[in-house]
Length: 365
Image (tube, rainbow, N blue to C red):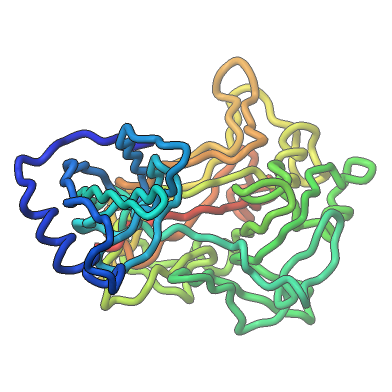
């Protein structure tokens, strides 16, 4: 969104005083230089991260222009029309210099920048995640510590659960991948082919596009979530959790992006040896829970359907879905549970309990 020059001030003296005492006394040692009296042209209001556009309605093709932040002396633009984004709130006192040969004209403006609603947002960004030692797979790489116990994916304020046992070739929780593979590996209708290709994503990459990093989750419910305390959260009792900052700070949940993983996607369509093809009435869903600073599990939760055949057709998105999780409120953790109508009451879902996430966003209080 662009913020154009909106609001004029009634005070000219402020800009003139600022200009003559703070900025232009140092422009030249020649007191006879042909400087004009600076003109205060008004005030514009904006918010952080929005582009400010100020058109002074002057465009002398023989002149050169500079827009200067009076406090920092940073040159913001050398064009007659200013286009600039302010990322911090405050009042910015700007000077426009028009030089035509040895003649100068000056105009001053105030830009009042308020905090945008998302000013304190923290959004998961895996763009710089190090894949230099990652393991090659079809269409990309996955995290080298996938099968190493006691290791975690950490990015910014976010720490992702991870359990692994190399001797069993087992992992659960979360790992990183940048694979663009979204094909089926159900060889002859079975699941064995999937074990070497657990790292894909139906969207073929993260929120930033094909081949960009994202998080793959596998829900290791059997020895964890099924036996977990339903009221008090414990890292050891839950398979798929994300820790958010530390308890000295407060964060409100905002949103998270979720995409389908290829294994359950193709299994729901065609079956995979364990899972059967979905029929009308079936669903595969993920539930997102919040945990407060007191480690109590919040009563509110958010449910998203990864596959939904409750209507007349099977709906399984192949792109990223942005899920509103504001209902969770202030959180120090979020954790995930999955459920499928294709399940055994003793051993749990036949549907492969994988999912992909990116772009988790929280608001620092």
